[in-house]
Amino acid sequence: KRQISTSREREFLAITAYETVIQTGTKQVAAQPRELFGSTST
Image (cartoon, rainbow, N blue to C red; front, side, top):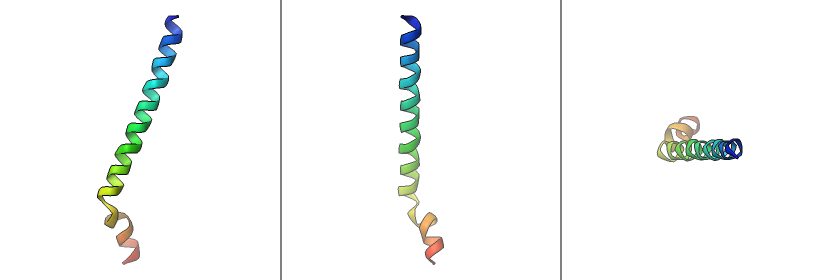
């Protein structure tokens, strides 16, 4: 039972970390749209 719960915890932590990275990346893109797209259009 311990191994099953541990694998569940690892899966949950992996998903949480993945979502955190996506949210952080989205916030950075939203905070700096001109630096990413403005330089190419100008």
